Amino acid sequence: MNFYFNRIFSFLFFIFFSHSFAQVGNKIGFIDSMQLKEYARLQDIGDYKSIILNEQKLIKESEELDYTKGIITGYLNIVNSLFVINNNKESLHFLDIAKQKLENDKDPELNARLYFFYARNYSVLGLYDQSNKNLNRALHFSGNMSNVEERKKREYLIYTWKRKNFMQLQLMDSVFKMERKSLALGAEVELYVAIAERNLDSKKIDSTEYYLNKALQLYQKSTARQQAVVLRSFGKMYVEKKDNKKALDYFFRSLELSQKLGLKKVSLETYKEIYETYKSMGDVDNEKEFLEKYTVLNDSLNKIEKSILNITIEKFLKEKEKDEKKKFHYTTIAIILIVITICIVLLYIYKKNNRYKDILIDKKNKDIDILEKKLDTSYEEVIQLAVNGDNLFLVKFKEIYPDFYNNLIRCYPDLNAGDLKFCALVRLNFSNKEIAQYGNMSVRTVESKKYRLRKKIGLPANTDFNKWISDQ
Image (cartoon, rainbow, N blue to C red):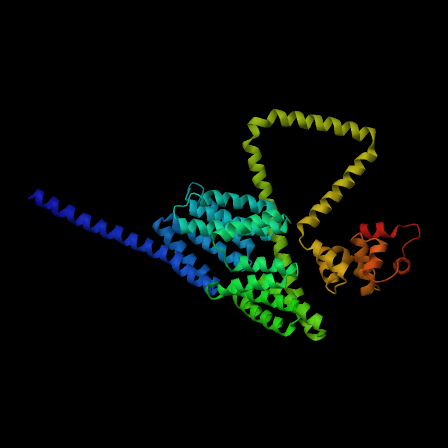
């Protein structure tokens, strides 16, 4: 009797747990499908809001099942969507969460995605060396991916972003090398657009049109974001061809797509193209309208990016401190000796020549100022705007030197726009000769202008005007 009872009990036990395991397996299969097929579908149409909402639900379901891959994939899909809509701060936040979850997981595909997403965020913040380091890590993990097609796709993306970084660093040999690697893996829309725009910068219209037509062949299969980029590039080409009507048609089609998707940076660049096109046409009203739209959106994005950059730098410093602690036991004695030696030398120098210390401090301040200018990717642009005599110059200058600009207006309300522009050029270390050249005037006129400004602000005769400006 007991024998039959035990057989029946074992059978029922097996049926129950087989059913439970089957349910868990079905749920995991559903999560995987949603994070692959549904994610791809929503990405193609640019519905990033739905992606984020769906992934939040899938992360919760994965946590209930203790399904680590589902949790990490969910965070990475959110990271990518936030990056595309320019929410870099939130994107980096979720990347850090994913990294913690992946700490003991060596899954090559997940790690390749993680470091690739870190690299993209660093790249758009202008941290190109840090971006390339993460791209190299992503390339290392992608080499261990078992799915050959997925590995090729990942390597293609890595090479195209390394190309972008090298382009910003003006390392053209490396740019061409990355292009060859990418094309060997099968080019996509944005690579063709990038090559086309490089040819456009060199005034090679035929080559530009060739590569844009290559991109156009992939247009229908590309994402909505890529389509917006293609349309804008066609607009730029028609500007160069002097067909402004056709150019504006492409720009507005691109703008409609980017605004629909919430792609603020794509919209910003398109606003600038539209503003400059209307300017070349002499259409003052439309020029003013789109310059204002560009300025408002640019101010907003700059504020956000500076905040993100500060957070990112703090993170780098913390990581550096952590690395230093790991090496502490091996370098303690050497560090102590170096510090003692430096202290003795600095003390000796301080006592012997106090002025030398002031020189060092002044040099350090200048080095910091140079570093800040390098961190601000807009610095080179404001110089170019000044050289070109562009109306956007003062707007951009105000973004980089808000304290200087606002202080002049507050303390000297009688200064007009011409006076402020002159002070801005002096603040940017333009010589009298350069100011005369870019302002289409004589050096003598510049000197007269400087003399009138001295009187206007009540500057003593024995005070150097240029030094006074730099101290403001």
